Length: 87
Image 1 (cartoon, rainbow, N blue to C red):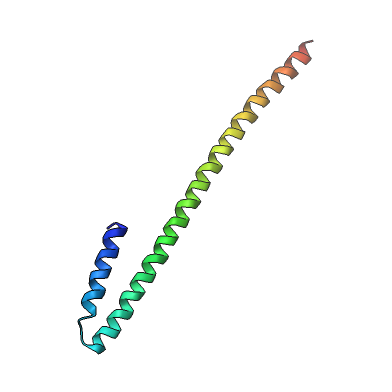
Image 2: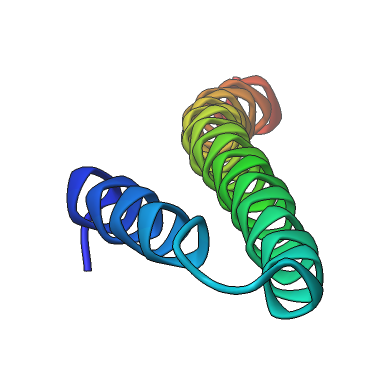
């Protein structure tokens, strides 16, 4: 269920709850509000996780770049040492 559908269904539920007797309405309105808050918290958590994954992906790319540069540098230095030993 996407965000728009969730909000629409929650609004419909809240509207229907408004038609109930007072004692039932109070309990269900509180539950609907809790559901809304939990959904918002879950959405923030998912967003935070996505940002963390993006950061992790970027960090891995930098590490791979650094590893490849180190390998190239290592090869270059080995070649220099071999030439120095031969000469």
